[in-house]
Image (cartoon, rainbow, N blue to C red; front, side, top):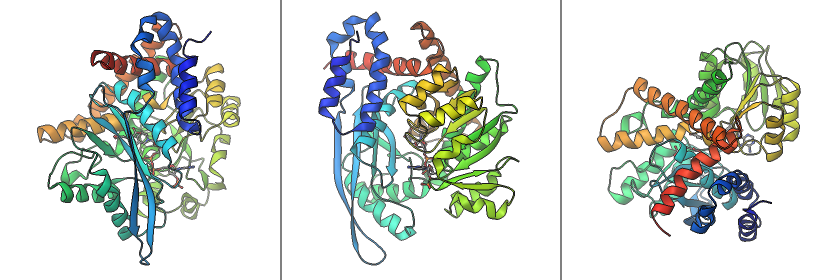
Length: 443
Ligand code: NDP
Ligand code: 2IT
């Protein structure tokens, strides 16, 4: 009999239409059954009921004027989920699919992820249903300025420190930071992912993708495996996917497929990453254009079918629920050994079940993609001490953090009698740190 069923029911009753949020909460609650078995006194503290409810949710109008002089209105969000171990911290997503459920699921996961980094950061997430695709630089700037006009009332270096996520990279962080500075007349580390000339950290851009590979490397080695010679498939071709590709290749893998929301490319000779960077980071073009330069590669429409490409290692780095049960079964049938989530919640619950029951080493995003926010934490440290570390210094700290996370989640899984179940390991390890802080601080 599950002990936390009543909490699950209360969360469903309170958030009936928030499917992504419920998906994220249900997974954590299932993991926590093992904790309350060992520590039934936790139930009396109400900490689990409190941890599943955001501290504060902000929704606001974002009006802006497009290049044709037409007034556009979007909806902005910031969910300040949990501040038990530090100021709210987490990215901003600009994508037409953004809604409150998605921002809440991201803020909830961020809380546990940030705890795993060992750095003092609470959890938050924000964004907007704005679609940056096809917009001019001027439109992006005016939109960001309007978005920050309201967001600035709710954030601050000691309160809430946003960063990038889907659709928010260096360009957007620049416009957002410029506007915050004008409004507040203050130069502080209120955002991370800043430009290198004005307070950003070396290696932040690379951090999520590199961190993913560092954690996977630790996990593979712990099971007498490695990236060396492994055929690897990476979904997405944004910030996380690009630097995952770079590090996986450095560690000896051969990355043969990448995607965007339109479809995927397959290059049996190994992806030409310089070309991907040129297409995606410079030209903001579609991945289909890859085959114009590399005619031996192929392009297939429909991004979901990328999991049909046989691989040893899969790294989903695009978006939530991009890999379902069918995709997971295909990976298993093709002999996939390990899967590491660069994206947040890219695997559906059914997909996770298939992977785990077939002994595919599976690293959940809240552990494996924590390198981005960890390096954001290092950016905050550098801003505070008014010094910049070298690329090598930041990269070494990132690597140490990711290896530590792996050992933490692996050790926790063993302690709770579920060796190699890194979902349970990550959920429990992240939860205990935040929950203990919440209990110390009172209701
Ligand atoms: P980017 O905007 O740089 O890239 C996103 C990539 O995913 C693009 O290739 C995009 O294709 C694809 N994509 C986005 N939405 C969809 C969709 N609905 N279906 C299919 N493909 C899609 O974002 P990031 O690389 O920063 O983020 C990728 C994932 O990693 C997200 O889940 C994010 O939350 C997570 N993450 C990011 C971190 C960071 O530091 N940036 C840190 C930790 C996690 P297209 O261009 O066609 O839209
Ligand atoms: O999902 C994430 O961890 C991020 N988008 C990065 C957040 C951050 O504050 O760097």
